Image (cartoon, rainbow, N blue to C red):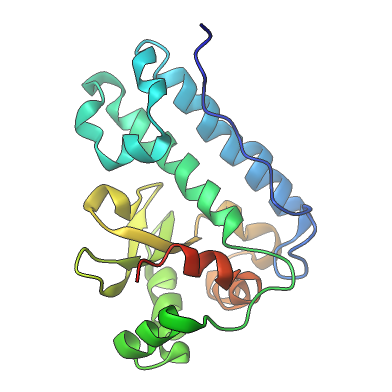
Length: 204
């Protein structure tokens, strides 16, 4: 029986659908080159251990102890990149933006004082992330919301959190349009956040 390898998911919208906030060329490069490379590298890393293909990329990063030492770093980086980007495409969309609703909105107000305060703290964490990485809204095991950032393709799930929403602050995400102005990109990004998808990830 042929081993089922990890596959690059299709974008759920057109490459130009997030303009003017995220340009078409960036989306092509980000999805077709960067995300594709993570998938290809993950498949290559675990070819010698085909039993691992039975696990999802999420399962791999949630328990790296099950991964042989010689490929652990490659799996951490590339499974993380695959999981992170698969989420990233889904939580954005055309004609999106605005504010969250329902219980997520209530929890954000409770934890951060209001949506605008939450945006400010989220953007600040993303701006201050040194080098490449992500900024996240996560839920703790006891149900609280926190903002955190991780380096490279690390995912909060590896530390026991639920990743509700993450923004990619690697330069390839924004450099063609925003150059070195990461803060401008972070502010613009809220215009493409698909809150319906984000709310699905919130466990209430």
